[in-house]
Amino acid sequence: MIHANPNYTVACSGSDQERAFGDAIAREFGLAPQVGEILFSRNIDTLEKAKEFLCPQLSMLPPPESMKGMREAVACILATCDNDQPIFIHGDYDVDGISATALLVSFFRELGRQTYSHIPNRLQESYGLSIDSIDRLIAQRPGQGGVLISVDCGISAVAEVAYARQRGLRVVITDHHEPRGVLPDADAILDPKQPGCNFPYSTLAGVGVAFYLLMALRKAMGIRINLKQYLDLVALGTVADVVPLTGVNRILVRAGLEVLTATDRPGLLSLYSHAGMGKREILSEDIAYKLAPRINAAGRLGQPETGLALLLANDMESAQNAASTLEQMNSARKQLEIDELASAEAVCAEQVEAGRNGLVVYQPQCHAGVLGILASRLVDKHQRPVLVFADEHKGGAGGIIRGSGRSVKGINLFQILTRCDQWIEQFGGHAMAIGLTIKQENLESFADDFNQNIGMLECKLQTMNQVWIDYCLPNASMLTDRLMQAVQRLQPFGEGNPEPIFLLPEQQLIAPKKRNGHLMFHLQGQGRIFPGIGFHLGQPHLDTTKPADVLFRLKRSWFRGVERNQLQATMLVSS
View 1 (spheres, rainbow, N blue to C red):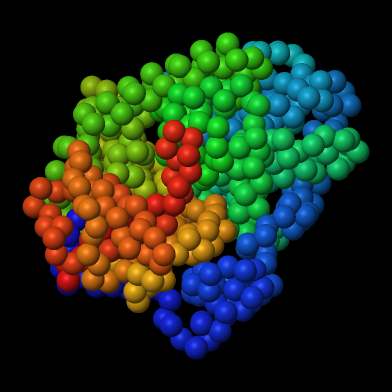
View 2 (cartoon, rainbow, N blue to C red; view 1 turned 30 degrees about the vertical axis):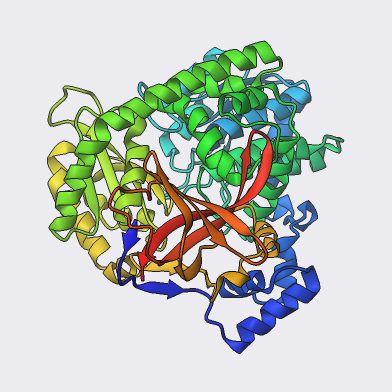
């Protein structure tokens, strides 16, 4: 949209130190110096840090034994294998949990081990480990003992772990969520956020923790299995769970994207086809916007086993069947979202107008599977934390209501809820995403407490409402193919490593056209004209004859299998 009098915040200051580092990056890596300046602004301010960032290698991963509980977890699983007992894997219904379940099932199947899995139905079962889900797992192979391995859940399941052990199972928890209070009395706990864990990177996804378990098992067993083949699953879950794509996660995802690009996994090939992705390089944004929503749809609509079946499919026929089902469910999910979004937006608009900083929406009949995605949409629009609630049991007025929340950068939603826990029955999650249940009668008091706690951080919200720019290009001659190519070396983009946003001031758009609400245009760069697109920027009142500041990302796009460089405008600002 066109904005006037913007409050720009430019990350790159243009200091002598910054420019000198940009020149050093250009000499050392052959990249456009502007990319070096962007790295410097992101605290990648030495050549050693830059090499680690630009050239991540699997050999840079910290050793698995540095994670607290790893020795005990490996011993527990090896004892189960030595006794030829079954391995039970308990997952979660989002992409992280589904891909982590597929990861462990695939690994143990490759070893020829008896493996049984269960992922809860979010519409019929409670979140994470439960007495019922443990019984469902054991029923697949009763009376044999064995080990229960949780993935992406379990860190708060004190009573449930005690029950599993009472039923004769060893228990290994692998999780990445924030612990609360007393930890379960499991045989082993792997969670880089648990007290006393010295693992150097605490923001792994659940599938990342599970992968580290496999690294340790391979070493202890002395077996020759190529674990890189599983990094496609690690990349899926890590990007989908919106954890920072820095450090260990960057190494895992960068390698995982290579595996995704070259994959022969039937389920992924089928999913690519349904998502309209031809034979080309897979990027993190493909996971975020094309692959993950389709797999997530299965969990949202109460059929997570379909997503698991897709990832475990051994032949194209079963893979195509699973992918077709996911496509149908994703379409149904989109319609559920459309049905609820307008009324939820109206509630949020009223709260914003009233000056509230933490938004709480109660949609009694909303489908539980779209609470999280509604919260995400509302956060994107209003740039403040949002919680969306619905009745846990439809028609059960005055009972328990279930909520899902999303946050904005710089506001830790988990910590905020710990300050409001007098009103909460249960909650769990991490800084950016949360799930919780409260009594309906406590909703108003909780909402006020939540808003008050967010209000204490109002300065952070005001900062977020500024227009953030990574680099201001003084003139269009700095827009070059070399810069385009250099920016791609910063991939994979995502949480913690956003795509750089550039500013070109006072530009006259070349051949602008409005089409279906979008804006097509060109800009003159150095030596050639660059094509551009602005999604949802082609409003009827937009005057494209006047110069405007153009805020944009430098993108790679594919059309009918042909790659090209393109500007993707995020905002036009009237001069």
